[in-house]
Amino acid sequence: MILEKGSRGSAVQAVQEILNFLHFEGRKSASADYESLETDGVFGADTEEAILSFQADNQLYEDGRIGPVTLAALQQAYETRQRELSSPLSLGGGANYSLETGDADLFGTGKEKGYPRVRLRSDVMSAYKQVYKEVHRQGGLMTSSGGIRDLNATVSKNRSATSFHYSGRALDLFIWSGMQDPATDAYVAQRIGERRYNVYARCWQDKAEKGALPPQQTIADVVTNKNRVKGVSVTGHFLDLTALFAKNGFKPIRARAAFEKGGDYLGAEWWHFQWEVGLVPGASTFGAELLKIYSKATLANTPPWPYRDYVWQQDWF
Image (cartoon, rainbow, N blue to C red; front, side, top):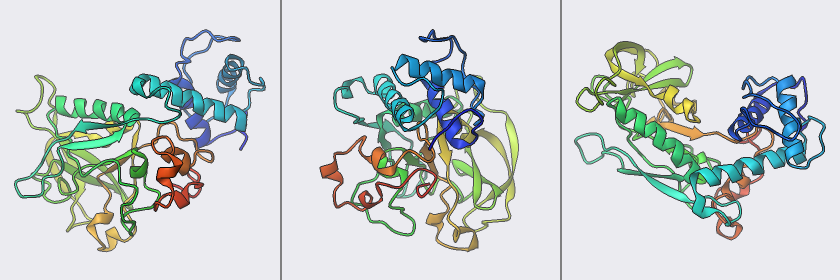
């Protein structure tokens, strides 16, 4: 894959995001001054200048294009900086990140209330904590059905062998804390298209910091497990959780095709958010992500390892 001036698409956008993360804004490089890039997926003059500067700083051939060598250097620089920021004690351990545990909230009155903790890769945990902090500030909850998945967990129609959970890049909100009763659930799911949902966190006045409670609003097309396509309107104090997750690098996924046709509720996937920061379409591989937290010896003979050569947004989504 070669990216150059005139190229467009998600791969260009991913590279622009990596360059911005490396603190190119206002930084004096070996060859030029430049400001933060627009992450618009368009390889224009500013992106070319940023690449030239990166190449100069890293003793690479300065042609302003992104080929395999420059892309590998960008990814290495990104990973090194992530470790410096999120897990200093892991430095010196190759490309490995640590796994960290964060807090989550229980929800419900029955036996099933979710988990009080979630475990994620260290850099992902840093982003999660930002979401958790803001949700709590506004009076909401952050529930959990889990984060990282055991390498030997059973693979099924609702558990992909290439799930982000295996690499510590994904979390699930407690699956019974939404799509059950919109009047009381911790979350409501608004249907915004076929198999796509926007998730809002309900906020309570007695939980919010002073002055932080979101204004009351009415959300249309809120769907439930029983009513999967035609939704209802719900009024309350809500925080746009999908937007907050997106601000911190997490993206939702689509429901499985059978769900809206009456299939298994476990295919709803409204609860799933995955951290896609640093992944380059057409270049990043599933195996490389696994190797950031596990050794090859540990990965051998596990269900996800045969898919190690899958490429992001080609055969791995």
